[in-house]
Amino acid sequence: MTYVKTVFSRGITFLREHPQLWFTALVAVVILSSYLYFAWRFASIAQNAQEDLVNVRAGSFLDTFVVFVPDTINDRELLRTHVSQLREENPTIDSLVIYAEHGNGDLRVYLSDNGPNEGTVIQDVPDLYSLAYSTDSSYTMKTQRDGERYFITARAIHDQNGSPIALAVMEQSMAEADKQITENIQMSMYLLLGVLFVIVVLFLRHARIVDFATLYKKQVEIDKMKDSFVSMASHELKSPLSVIRGYVELLEDGAKDEEEHAEYLRRISISANELRDLIDDILDVSRIEMGRLRFSAEPVKTADILREVTDMFAVQAEGKGLELSLTIEEGAEDAVASVDRGRLKQVAVNLFSNALKYTLEGKVAVTQKVLDGKIIEFSVKDSGIGMTADELKKLFDKFYRAEAKEARAVKGTGLGLWITKYIIEHMKGTISVESIKGEGSRFVVQFPVSKEIQVQ
Ligand code: ADP
Figure 1 (cartoon, rainbow, N blue to C red):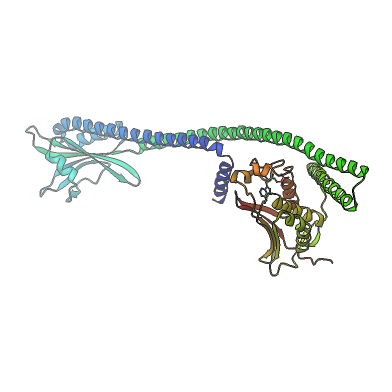
Figure 2: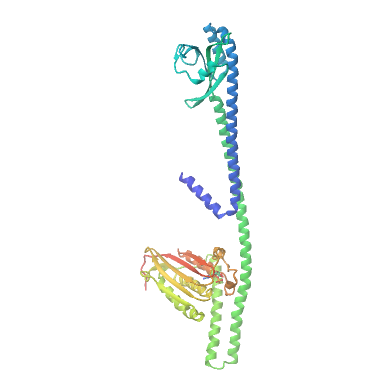
């Protein structure tokens, strides 16, 4: 049962991940249910036809039977021979009984072939018998005994004057016909299983083709993003270089005073840092792709890292007129995670830098807390441009940059979050995000609390 449940829930998940297959699944369900419906219809039509046939046959059998019975009715032994001969020739007849009137509306078994003992008096005469006895037609009734279906047909036997003198009752078993129908239904079920198998095979093939198509679409998208990355990266590489070259030339010509000299150096340093960051990102990507990004885990007080990075970005936030706050909730100050210190800082830098880059006014609030004493959670919440649900879906893809013009107005490579997610997951953490377009975003990072005490 649990296996069926697992298979069923896996199937549902598979369908959820491949919405393109819903139509195919629908077609499969329609085919299967039509098949079942027609099999059921066929079985019930066959059963009805069988019943009609038995009915008619039983009627005509008794009609003929009662024609010759009056001639032999008084010679019971001769009649018995005829009856048992008839029953032998018609194996579906289970019993054939002739009742005679016994007074007071009762009946007595006059002759019995596989029926009740001869001489038995029936006081509660079934309606079917009474009805048949009082008319000149045969009447049939369906009944069930020991799980088998029977047809009971009764017909009166008249003398030359047309008065009833006896009643012939025949029971026919439907066991053989029912067995055939059951076998047919079984056969249809095997066929259905075959059809089901073929559908599943087709379905899986279709799923693979759809997977390839999705993969191809994704590849085309990645290629497009790569192209835009290459042109953006060459621009990002060139522009700080030209800034550096420009200021170096100005310095060579000689600055006006000390202050101007320092300002030129500061701008050179900013551009050099930009270049370094970009090259670091590119190098990280290639290290990740070659599986060469190294991590050395140690007990780290994450609050320290967040404080360090908040200080690092304080000037930038102030310069942009944004409020940058850090809140370490009670009990979270000393929380320690087992992570690579440098890489955790890189994660925080990326999230802080994005929050400040994509926020034009308002604030960036960083909070750390510990959940159930087991999970360290820090979040970076901004009141920035936010993202749509569609943008959120691709957010952690390599080279992904939102299309919106307010996002495009900001410099970026589309690599930061991809690297960030990789790093977090390799340090046994998770990252999630919630965002509302035009209102802001909140990135949440979680790491298991480490039992080790941080070495100062
Ligand atoms: P980038 O170098 O472009 O910032 P990231 O991988 O860090 O690369 O981010 C990918 C994209 O996600 C960004 O281009 C931007 O569109 C979107 N994004 C990331 N952080 C935020 C944020 N805090 N607010 C709004 N959009 C964001």
